[in-house]
Length: 373
Ligand SMILES: [Zn+2]
Image (cartoon, rainbow, N blue to C red; front, side):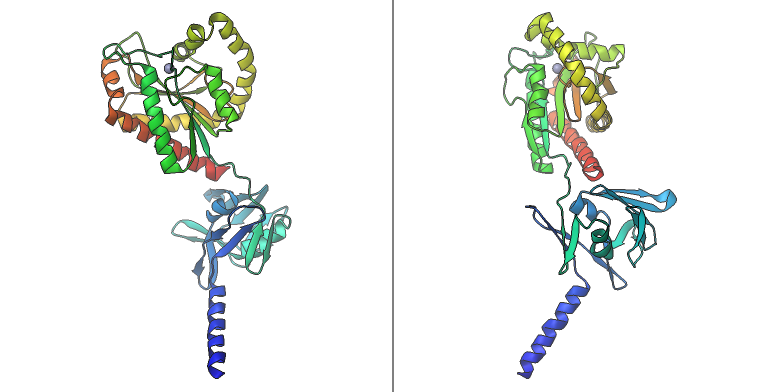
């Protein structure tokens, strides 16, 4: 009997110790698996790294070191923390977390009391604490989960043609596209869909339509370039815009010529021009900054990894990008009209470099926007 009492006491004490330092379980009120907020002990008080809030709430976290503030957006509420202070402002007043925000190794840590007391008080309809478990509304998840890769041309449209090796744009971009899709699936765990995974012709507008219908979060069109000047070389990445320079206009005309040559001539061109300026306007407004950002990242990664000439990020009115309701870019991976670059574009090891760079560029973009939105 005494032994049982002793055991009971031991279990009880262990239980108390565990309660004193414990990770916090966050349960969602609808069908999502629970998350755990990892905590660490600072002088007997449980703290968590502020970026745990990304994971649990898809929160947007901004640090403004100049004025010693930390801004965190959870659901639609902004919480403003003062560094080294227990006070946090939200919903038009200030709340006391009892323990201050702490900085350790350059990381910002919030006391668990923020989640257990302040959050349920500020947002009683979204979060509530019972028996050490926080139950919350599932957050709005705008992270990038589905990517459409669009290998240009195909079927009756070979795209640009190589001068010395007889290679065709449509074959090169299909190969790179397939490899890229496999890499992105494996490394980012995202869903990747190809507009074509074989040698078939797809009209330009069906490509973005495909991406829209599949609710894609990113659209990447792959091409190789061609120029009359055989010395032209290098990599350039485009995003959609109505304004462009003469040179940008040249590449645009080249890629858009598909419509003239393979989709029904001038009538088809007119159809694109009427229809798409309306759609284009919407798409540009909404995703200009993100598309620009993605283009800059990809151009940098691509030219660094391959050593190819930096032709830069450009804007153009590609038909293939018009109407995309997500960030969309078009990569010109090199000049098939340049003897050396044609040879490289056909080379497995060089294609692997292109795929590496594209994958890293998408990764950077995903990590940035997943935590921002
Ligand atoms: Zn092309």
